[in-house]
Amino acid sequence: MKIDVQALSARVHRTPLLTDVSLHIESGELFGLVGPNGSGKSTLMRCLAGLRRPILGRVIADDTDLGQMPARLRACRIAFVEQQADTTDRLTVREAVELGRTPYLSPLRRWGADDQAAVENALSSVEMDAFADRLWHTLSGGERQRVHIARALAQAPDLLLLDEPTNHLDIRHQLSLMALVRDLPLTRVIALHDLNQAMTCDRVGVLHKGRLIAAGPPANVLHEDLLARVFGVAAKSATAPDGAPRLHFSHAL
Image (tube, rainbow, N blue to C red; front, top):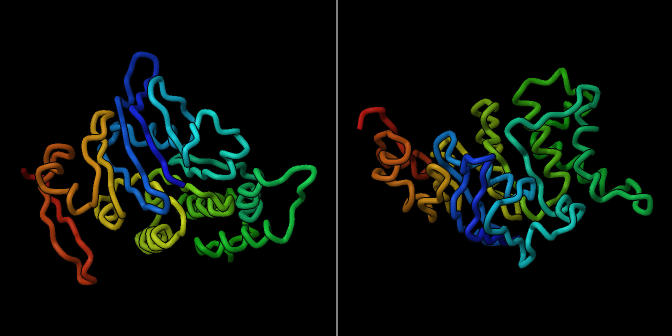
C-alpha cells in the first residue's frame, strides 16, 4: 500500500498538533517517524490509521481517500499498534491475537484454517507461541506489547503502523522486533524514540513542533546539525561492528 499525506493539519480544540504535513510513502517501504516528545508523531500515526480526521488535508491510500474507505475494509488493510493499547484481562494470549482476524469474519465467513494459521504464525513471529494459553493479566509489559504486535500481524494488513513499539521491550526483543519489522513484505510506518533504530529504516521523517521538517534516507536526514537543532544533543556518526551506521550522542553542544 502506498500512502500520500496531502497538506494535513490536525488540532485538539484550539491547539494545533500537525500543520501542513505532506509526505509520500512507497509501497513496501519501511518508513521511520522521529521527533521529540509532543512533536506530533502519535497524532500523525492516528491519522494514517484513519482514527483521527484532519481539519485540513487528507490521507490517500492506494489512490483512495482514507476518509472514504469503508471501516471494515480499512480494518482489513491497516493494522495499528498504539503506545497504550490494552486488552481485557479475561482473554488468553491466543484469544487476544485471534481478535486480529475479526474484520474477516461474518455470518457467511466463519473461522477457518487460514485464520488459525495466521494466528499461529503471528504468535511464532514475536516469540509468544509458548505463551499462547497464558492469561493476559499474567504478562509483563514487554510481553503484552509483543502480543499486540502479533494481533496486528494476524490481520495480514497491507499497512502496518507501529507507535514506539520497542518502548517496553528488553534489548534482545527490541533487536528481534526490528529485524522482524524490516523483513515484513508490506508497507510499514514506525514511530521511534531510538534514533539508531531509525537508522535501519529505508527512509525517515522528522517531526518538530507539528511540522515535517525533513524526510529522506536516514544517513542524509539525521545529520549533526539537525539533531542539535531538533533534539538539542550533540551527535557523531560512526559505524557499528556489523557495518551498520551508528550515532553516538552527548548532552553538550
